[in-house]
Length: 583
Image 1 (tube, rainbow, N blue to C red):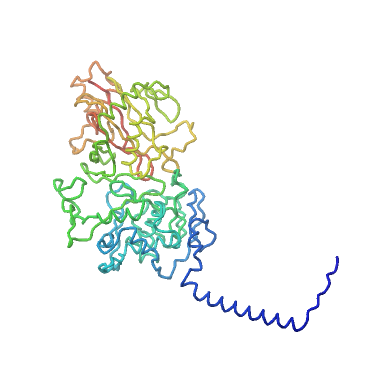
Image 2 (image 1 turned 45 degrees about the horizontal axis):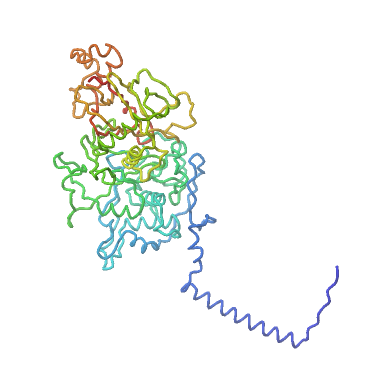
């Protein structure tokens, strides 16, 4: 190595340079101290992290939790973080008030409103908002700034979700699911400020549970175990990676719907429903003639200033599962103003049967759409879609001797797509997903043709398909069918859809006709003599059609029934068949 020469420095010059350096250092230190003291009042130190945090991956415990929910099959053991002990300052409050339209003229929409929670498909609630020990806010001030207890609970849960980093006005529906589940069943400081009595623990699972992964966490609400059914019972749907975990837990939240099936996708929407909440009926029931078109009692039509607390009913649906209507009595009406149809006619459901769940759908489609669908099906020439002998099974073309109808498919026609979109709206989906639907199946029953009782729930007996049809586990299957009738048939003409485990509405047990007696009555009438062979499955079908729950066809009639229970298991009561056409 070459050595470097040593440069000599004059002592006086060195002293002057050191003095200047000391002065510069002192001035720099003074400027730093002044800047450090003033900066919080001018520009927050973490302004960049606040602005960029929602768009960056989580890197520490203090960063926003933007990771998607893990696949249930690989859920890690629960690690419960220590609940925050410092009261949140509701930093979201200003944006929240703007979001829900809260001002001097319009106060907090949740003021005077109790949230009532039902499990999916159940007409009776499983939990109510707690009122003991809960002090509602005082009357709104002139600026409309006072927040209700419910609003505060929602804001605290929202802040725990992203630690206040993600703007409230960009929350997506999956964020709202997590926030609402947390506010109802957890609370920011335990059960003392959860919205539901007992943290919603009465909304517990209704199915047989294996060891749930949340059992290892202390003092966990049973409602969380209802919302997240566990690794072996949570279906993996296309949006699974978008689900957001409940704050403080590694569990998936419920999604929430109104009685009419509308999914709650934003806090603004929730606030709108709160403003429209009604006063409950004192005795819980009212006479049939006093009911409104939506099934509520006449006293619910308007809310007076001195009326009781109003109720907002929400239906909690487990992660990965689908909303199912919750009828309480035959004849109950569900108005569906969110469903758009030709000519802007009102759409509503009327309950035909509780077990199985069967509904009439009024104004679902019109005769012009009916004719267009039939004409297209008859004109179809492609081998996969044209009208031909009906088949059965999950795969391939399998002719069944006890299914003698013909059928074709319309998957992407204009009218077919319009009807399929309408079906999804009625069934509680907030967006249309093509992969969730079948093609529109067009069936033709000629004289004497029929279809033996069956379930629309698909079972791949020979395991030829890669798809997992076990909807009670992590698979998926048909859960609902909407039948559209294109022809008019009179009483005794046949062609009905019969539910062989159901009974005609309003019929007492003493009035019920058993199959043996129904067959004897049919043979005595002579209606099918010479038309159907005595003792045949077709003759038995006609007897069932005249004694069991049957939906008679008429042009533009639509009927809905479910093939699954709310927990995903097959609904055996939905066993149904196509009655032979007689005339």
